[in-house]
Image (cartoon, rainbow, N blue to C red; front, side, top):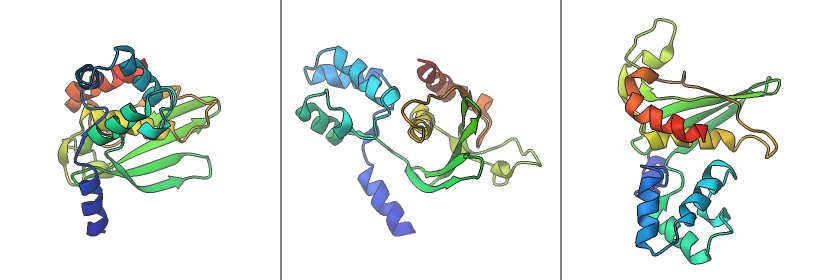
Length: 190
């Protein structure tokens, strides 16, 4: 629905908390007079504690949580569809702020918890067996958009489970977007 998309874009004019992470966040925090360790605290909430909002970061001062919410977007994508197969595979269709859609998947296989993420909107490779390339490539995803897929999929797991494998075989050709993909993978590896 175009009105839903417009409302979403209106709610998301801010920069992602994941944009140029952690440099941009650390610089902003320093400008706010916050101690250096705040950046690590926030990173812990984002990547290890699976926070879904700044309000959940309860070991941060309430004022800082409010300031973060007024300065950064926690989520810049919107979940358009969430499906789960009989084998517990879960797929998310995400709508980005430019109205582009991408998919990402959580696969469960025994003890393995594998995520399959996208690196581009569409694909230029033209493989005959793949629907992602039917309309070509629209654009590369940003590092923040790549990371956000990981965070969204990670939140689907119960607290005692961890992601064990990461595959970049969703939409797009990962080698065609290395400049944005490699920083995301480095952060995911932490």
